[in-house]
Amino acid sequence: MPQLRPDNAILITLSAVGAMGEATTYTLPETVRSIVFKESERLDGAYPKIEGYDFNKGVNYDELFKSFVRTGFQASNLGDAFQIVNEMLDWRLSDETPAEDCSEEERDAAYRKSVKCKVFLGFTSNLISSGVREHICYLVEHRMVDVVVTTAGGVEEDLVKCLAPTYRGDFSLPGGVLRSKGLNRIGNLLVPNDNYCKFEDWIIPIFDQMLEEQKSQNLLWTPSKVIARLGKEINNKSSYLYWAFKVHCDATIAFPLLVAQTFAVKIEKNTWTSS
Image 1: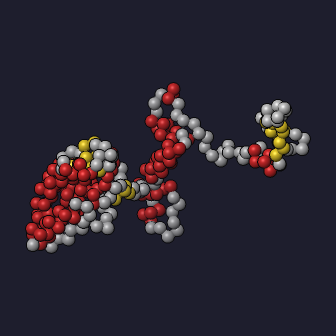
Image 2: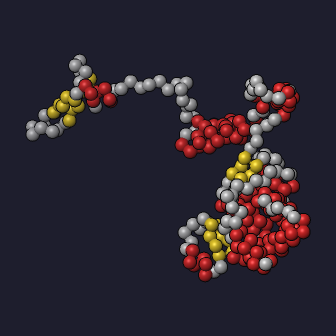
Image 3: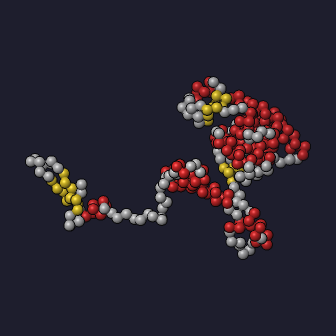
């Protein structure tokens, strides 16, 4: 073990080094001592103390989720996310000081208390392919989000899963083998070709009808209008698109294009058959 000497050097004793078995002592410089025995900066009050949830107190989900911030590693990032979401849900315009140039309505206390944070929910299509779809559906159904932002695949996969199920496979399944069996892999999920065939059979007649309405009524089909129509037509409570249409959620889909993934094939095929 290191031993301190009056000259503030460190003595490290190595036994049985000499030829006669005598102890040998090395003296290390002050710079080494300053590193090894560096006085620690105080962390109390500046950083949260790491401490997990105590299940001896019973299962209190609110407290459990709050404890994630103090759990460490990735759990702390999840805990931070919980805090941000709660701040979004709890925020009211009344929490802010009115601007000097705001309108009379914006100065009204009741009005300011009624204005909530507009919540945007963004996700990629693979989350809809997975079981996270049901969580998203719940959020939309119960008006816990105001605007949905996703890709064309996030629209397509929702509709496909209303027509046929997706199955659990394995990440290591080779694509060539699956293709020979008429199967597609999304991560560790398996989707039969038949699912997309059913989707095509379902959506092409709807596109035909929408084209007829466009010609006869001079309608302009924006991406959001197309998606709202598909949510209406699918008429399935397991679909988040259905609930976006049903509860009048602003189902804004951020593309740049609605013609992504196999969705594009359906639109192009409809163009061929209708021309």
